[in-house]
Image (tube, rainbow, N blue to C red; front, side, top):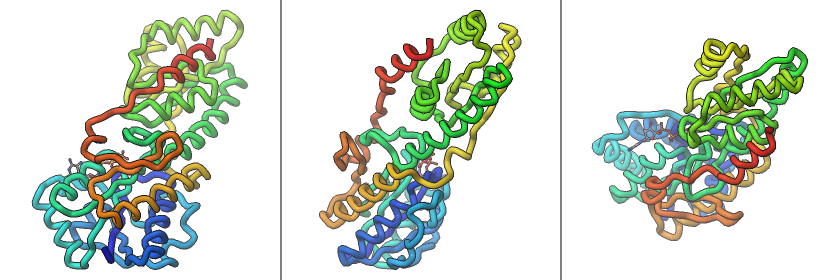
Length: 319
Ligand code: ATP
């Protein structure tokens, strides 16, 4: 193998740049030429690729976002589009592809691998919703962004004796809500993996009020309902007034933490090793501090459960 390419796809996450840097630098270290594909699979189909040098990835390890840009492409889900992408890669004599993205991006990488083009996937998403890895690239940074925001909101919640509902990202995975909620001492944490009873939230708020505590923080994962909907329910049915704060895209940006930079660097370097070993269709991750890889199709069939012990603890500590 002489030439490989790297792309970022789906929602961006802090640490994607550190992963690109690792792929490029490790690739060059191993004697490869490394091409960057711009705008994910959409750019791949159009042949938007450029050779990256050592200097192309200088001064990016600390930057959020992705220098290769990211995109979503419905078109790429078609077989003919995937063949078109492979044709573009082959025209440049590229023999392997590193895909950095979430589970949708993994599906794309699996399709290219099935069609005979060697691909490996790196988990780049803030949601921490990819099985086969304890952490995804960007999750730790997103958690720290969330707790910084909630700490600030708690200051004003305390000053004004208010209850805040903070809506955080997580359509199917409650990791961001659960772990940030535990870290900020949230009174209630609502996640998609756990059925919640509005009466429990109400009882907890009322109990707090009875003992003179008038401010509370409720952390809500967006996949359950919107903060506005929950606030309306609490007001209309239980006469409990709340304020809402939707953190939104702020969670996806910013300078990656040390943890995410190191994770991205280790996973990116492993991607090169796997391609050089002739492997394809592998999803790279870190489990119990070890860098591991799994069959990408098998990974896509799984879903890691929420950590029950952490969920129970969050309840025990928020009485
Ligand atoms: P995030 O978790 O941040 O949303 P993601 O990688 O899951 O990231 P998606 O929009 O689901 O984001 O997927 C990114 C791209 O991967 C899609 O726009 C599409 O081009 C490609 N993709 C998704 N699913 C498939 C599939 N079944 N077959 C081929 N390509 C796919």
